[in-house]
Length: 274
Image 1 (cartoon, rainbow, N blue to C red):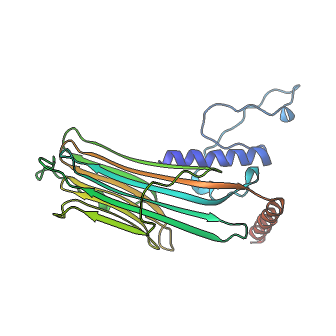
Image 2 (cartoon, rainbow, N blue to C red):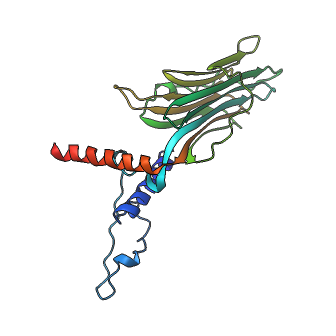
Image 3 (cartoon, rainbow, N blue to C red):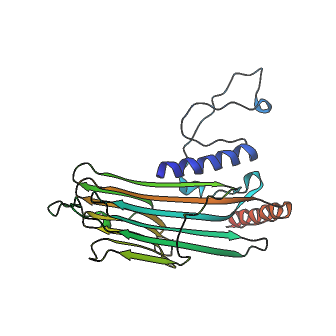
């Protein structure tokens, strides 16, 4: 996941630099073509030097309105599901959509769903198997942890971050509420999801383990984090955590482009005076 975010950041930076200053920053994947306006036909060719740029450097670069587009909102889809071999299932899902109108006001919609279906017979859980410790892992950014003790299990964590002017469809169903939870009659299988000011939490609990997804916003003490965790202690379990974050873009007006340029110029001037 870290790799995907780095490549996204590089794509934005490389486009910005190529349009504004002719400079390039990337991983070493071979020399880029030299624009004809910059080529010197009668002089010896010069090798263009490449330099890797980290995300923390890209975060402070200006020119994020390249192409006359700006981020106008986002859609976050979350889905966790667990299927046991005896037919029991647990599902927790949710969608959060945030859009910005013409006067820069934000509006949000949220939709959640939790569902549990009980099964019969052997659930595949192994009380002698142990898969623990993942809850204690804490990182800034994105973390994906899978702990498996058993045979013939299928489990995966998937996170996708993209952007465009057409938002994806939200997950079907739900109660248009900020939280939802469900459990079987015995309380051995539980599913829950909650959106709140402290972040987002998705959790499935079964006799064969647990699956969680957590999004914590940044604050003064720590940076934001996205965490996906699978702990499977059994056999023939099918488990998945899926996250999709779509950043919605819209065309910037000429007035907004000028205002952005003036603001960045003032910010750079303030840095120089220091």
